[in-house]
Image (cartoon, rainbow, N blue to C red; front, top):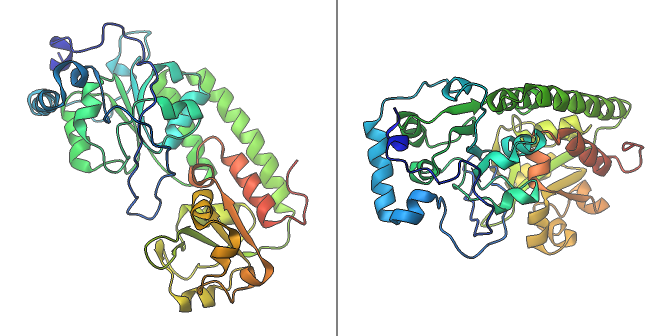
Length: 350
């Protein structure tokens, strides 16, 4: 028996926690993919579950840590076997913006009790309690919510925290984060299975496949591939740009472009020499980066870009970060939107 249930720290009702509006402060992703900013919301600390509200944060923290070291280890695979017969999970914590989107798309949003700071879509997800940034989680806020399912995107962490959650007896389903259309299909199937909503999952997969096939067919007819430089950040030093093997490079390819920095791997600071060698036809940035810069002209005038074909043609485009790099059920929309920006002189959209 899980000690968490034995001492009856659950809320009086098994239903999901009512939405609330509070401060969100995601941290920078060290791998080069910082999540989109949330608007700051005054009020509660992160992870304000029943334990934290009733006992206070210090006592709740000590209790949660004690739980993690005294209970029996969970089945690492997690899954529906942990729930009562014919009853899906009733208290879900979703870590990963794409997973949260899928939960909503499957119609199970009423089971969500918390999300992470990358869960920005749909807008209603922003009002749910926030357990922190996906790669900088803490066990205590999650344990305090007493979830019966934790959906984790691959690479969520840090690893000691994930081990602590397993040791506390939580049912955890880890979902691969492959940045491809097949990867999205896997996410949908895994989440649908974990929620016991296979029929809804099959419907969502059909919708995704039909939309993606239509977009891919239209893009395949385009015979021009502009060189695109994706710059994720301009703050605090040289531009941080996307090389090969990144989610941004994949999106550029799917939308009928060529990554201008295919000679380097990952997200790296862009030197003036590398920027000149890249010779991008188009510079692509997150919408928040454009907002911070104030104008397209301000970015194109930077010394790294001023002599580029993109600057001479005035070609700078911006997109919402989560839509562009989320690789969730909105991938067809994301590819369609980016392709239209890259190929405005061609018929891409419906």
